[in-house]
Image (tube, rainbow, N blue to C red; front, side):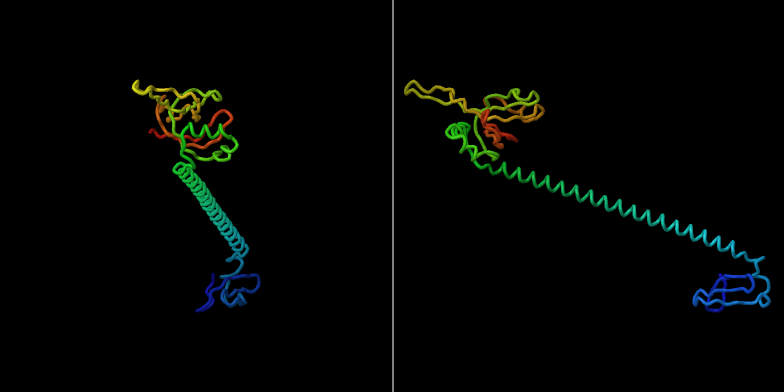
Length: 231
């Protein structure tokens, strides 16, 4: 850089015959005879080709630095955008799971019917078509007694809980009352994975209410997603 006057800076752009200086502010070129300024700007003192090559190399380095900087910024923006996308997707999935769980809990709180094992069995025996239309894929609360907690005949890794009708009583006047086993063989069953902790809390003879979704009647009334409430 050359100080041309009190206001302007410039640069030597040619020193072959006349010394030519370019004004950075105005863009104008000033030519000066060598005799006026001596040999300070002559080719033997100032190698313009080397200066141009140095300036070009410096410009290339600067451009490469800018390219790398922009690439790094773009990659950072891409990473941030991807992270935000993943967080938004995770939030969407979490919200969906939460809403689904809330809907399930609402179904458990508000079953469409409160019936005994005997009552719902009699409905299916009376007219299975009407009963299926009423109960299929619906949450019901069924009261009964645990008949068995045993291996499933359909899946060796599953356990079937069978809920039946409690024994009744028959009275004979002054001779008192006696327990009479239920002979209807009505039942409702639920299947669980063998690892499900809930099956370890159930015992034959327990009076309870089971809540679950009705999904089969071909092999007896079967519920899924069962929860048990001792009564």
